[in-house]
Image 1 (cartoon, rainbow, N blue to C red):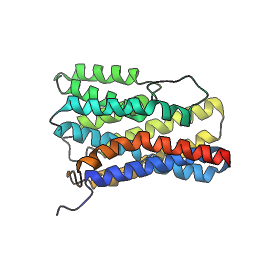
Image 2 (image 1 turned 45 degrees about the vertical axis):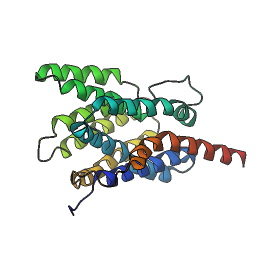
Image 3 (image 1 turned 180 degrees about the horizontal axis):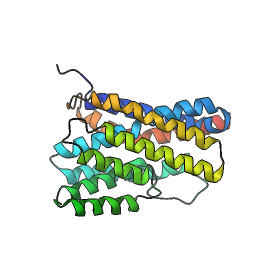
Image 4 (image 1 turned 45 degrees about the horizontal axis):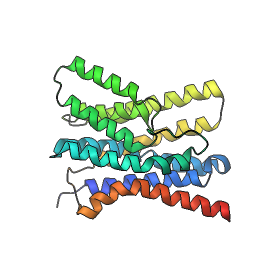
Length: 242
């Protein structure tokens, strides 16, 4: 048996980190318990880099990339309303609000990059897709991370560079926001950003195997996203009711 972490292990880590992060939001940690908020944010930072990395891995080995995109589309659409009412109920509904949409856009970008050989045109496509994702969940930095994982996929260490770049970019954005708005919570966000570095040893431990993946597990990981959002909405309702 090949040692290390397989895709199944990484997916479990990602959804667990995501659930803890979103649970912190439901418990209003950012307004009532800042140390808890920092902890849930640090843990939550593990989720997207793992998902982005596995997206690139899945893209390389997928026999039907269109079907892959269709699955992401279906569960993105199912997640729009629960994500909206969990995080931004006071705002107008924004359909591109959840991480599955960003992953879908990243997948579409990879499908185009695969067909384009000229580096200049590839960089233009990455720039356009990054601009398109502005304001989405993980937005342009998420698209840049997916593109970086793809472009560095043949290198022996194609993990550290993209993760470090993402960390520094996010930290700089939060620092600029703090200097502009003078909200102390932004300093906690900036500190939590360095939790992204924890994904480096996890992704380096990936052994390239799918691991345990019967059909119910495969679809279960997709269904987890809208499912856990609905569960947390119910939890919030019970908390408010009590």
